Image (cartoon, rainbow, N blue to C red; front, side, top):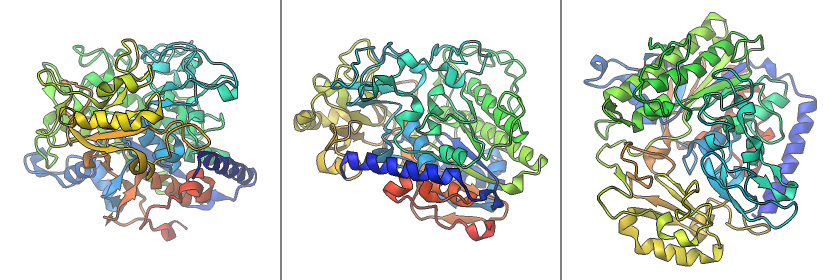
Length: 571
């Protein structure tokens, strides 16, 4: 399918959705009036199995996530659920809320590349260089960044939003001069919600008269609203990669006081500490509790959201972090037995979810709320013996981007000393300066296979099978990488010696995530059929009584609802 056809179809579906929104059915007739959507970033299906059943030597063999285990008693548990490929947070989140895969939503990574856009007017905080843009002229192409680098001040928890409180910046934290620009639209900045090519459940539900709210780790994840310029009713996004500060009046559900920094040895980022990350996540937990109470995230009177939720970062940190002179996270074996550090992160998240459940029950909302627990991504490898940082300190390892650096655009090249760098974690996404050089680039990568820990390489027909043809319209997609490299299990191209795992790739531990769909009228069921987290979006609309076809991804990719959901019980 040619890209213009895809985009044209998307426009037609958007118009159809808008027409529905003018005279919606009484979709509140469904016994489900609210959806609480939770992403426990990094949490695998096996993590849920282990914590809900208990493991020998952990917590005296008793379940160490009792609240999540209790939810499982009235939940459909999809044990073979896969997130997006690539399995980065940005496409992982957007796949959950759009029902789309990267080929359709045009989202590959929070830092990626687009051949049809021009650089920002101002260099981003992470190094995407400013450049020229001329309206309606041929684009130069640019690295795209939708993470902390587009904040006004990424060192601040509020993102530097003018006049904002200590923790509350949100969309006002985004510096529009640091956004990439579209020459076909008069060099207008591409806001996060307009970077996504298809609509989202948040946008659809809002258009149908619902109230929408979400909390996440960057102001840029306001992309969750979807295209059209309509932000969420309540969006909260304390910057996770800001400098750590004390949080007056904040105490975690497990009793850690956050008024002063609990781990003052690590203040460079919230993700550098097993304790500090819990204080950070508690900000979002408290936002959810206020929203259940019929308030905004900061306490103003509001409606209880039709759809709301948040991401947890604590488990991801517990899986990855080696905190110098403190502790090591991750797992002790390939079975997924958690270390003490990871255990405390899982217990923190479980206690937080327990607070949300109790709050729903206290307000008489539990019986009218569908709860979905999933994850944007997994983390690879679980087996602590498999991790290998490339390039390492003592070996001659190289990354694919380093091998073909001379063939990459300047903004993507490792040879650019001030740039943001290539898109490489436990995957390598490669956009070439000239797509015609793909065969030569592949040869160079193959010649260095041992040094790269090369697992599999996708290009040409093997890439087009699941992605659009790379290039420019009318026959190519400006966002599709020319080459995707997946390394051997455990190989990570960041070269970090402070981590135990990473995500982004296609390995089983990257993509197999927890997926629970819970309602008190459901009965416990385990589903082994392969499903995708992109099926969450149409399922939520179906439960609310909104036609799933209002999602552009359903029209374009045929994304089905999750199987075995007893919808008859909700009518």
